[in-house]
Length: 489
Ligand SMILES: Cc1ncc(COP(=O)(O)O)c(C=O)c1O
Image 1 (cartoon, rainbow, N blue to C red):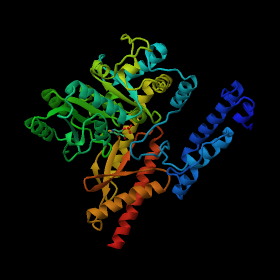
Image 2: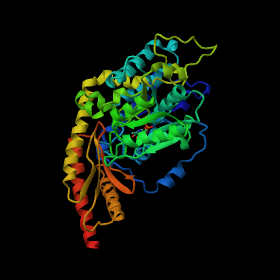
Image 3: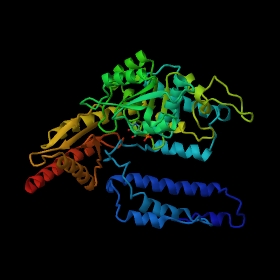
Image 4: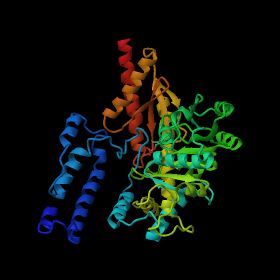
């Protein structure tokens, strides 16, 4: 294989950074070959990389700025052979930890095109047709979520930034300059990024009310009403409430319709966090599981979860598109004048100079077609339903949250595991032992005092085979843990 080094290419003309077409092609071939080989070998390698000595490795990687270039092969070698493997295997087919991400290959190619062609999409006039493709992708999300045609949105780097823009938008519309008296309502199971985003958007922690959940981890509508009344009674201004369409800990779907009714009655902005579960709304047969979602004033979506996109793809939809525009629209003497016929990214989001995030979604959807997406999402739910039933039958497992979408949560208990601490330790060990076997990765979550084991099926690579492995290994490791507890007891 030839060695591609910038030093050979430009040794007598240091200021020249351009590569020849042949070298660009050769570099691209190298990168594609490495990436495809990596993907093809995912299942042959342990799902959790070897973390032995990881701190020492990280210390050894600290380095001075390189004065001279290095051959591309030399850079790719350790990256693919040593550093990428020593990670959590998020793209592995057996990854059911946290909320699995995606990484469909066409999206990686779209990113390559977006970066290689490097067009500016901040302002409509600079790349009108490209911005239109991004607008189309946002319209597809809007249609799947059954939002009205007045809705507008934006692609963000993730759910957290979608949340930040939603809160800023609601705050501006509902409170104007009187920010300090505004209060927001989350549940104890709301993702922590909401409180962080609120702080960034000027809503301090002492203006966030945490509402209790019921036995199914869903926000209690009666407690929400009481909290709103209590704040009004002391002269505060309740302005925004958050429902979650699939919580991270247990997959619970809040009573979105009941919360929407309260929001309507109390004139609150209702935001639905669909970062994990929102895309199940794309599947008509599953829509009723998320009933009320399309009534939201704004909605967080995470295409890097439910649309299997690479990390760095979040989205926000806002029912009143003009409110989003009112927050972000600005002008400058050196820029083309704002126009309003076409979607214009800088008028609906905080970025001015930006890449082309919409191409990932547009190209991937055009390549696969929506039918495959619906089939894949429906399959993930089916797999979770099947596995949930199987896992519930394993001796010692207590199901705390049966699957509503594609996530379920449980813990281990037995006569010998008779304290909460013992059950928590055993459940934690169960997750760790399955993960250590290398084919399936599971993580848990502490909810209240209890540590819950979790299985979340959302990787597009997870199929029936991995689910069977997951169920079998959970059964084997549970039996081993119960036997050990009996002996110890
Ligand atoms: C329900 C929910 N909301 C919000 C987020 C935050 O999204 P992101 O990590 O894309 O910023 C997550 C992340 O896992 C989530 O599961």
